[in-house]
Image 1 (tube, rainbow, N blue to C red):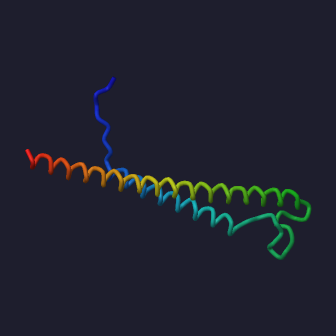
Image 2: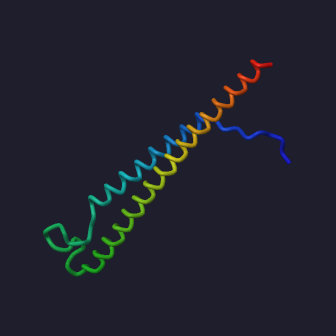
Length: 111
């Protein structure tokens, strides 16, 4: 059994949360970009984008792109939620550490 202590570096944890939040934002932006450039549903005003002989294939591509958008949106939302949780945990760790240090100072002053 190890006798090493487990430590939390709140600065690094906070940086990780910020990096994850930025990454989630990039994923969310990617979802928006894909959704703004959909293909295959025939909504361009000129008929099916895939060509009149490939309407069903174009529709299948469109459905696939809709799924990609949903997946990216879910990934971005999940990343943001995890980043928020890590950020909140960082605050709790910092507050707990500060409170423990305060109690230690109080106890050592009473000795």
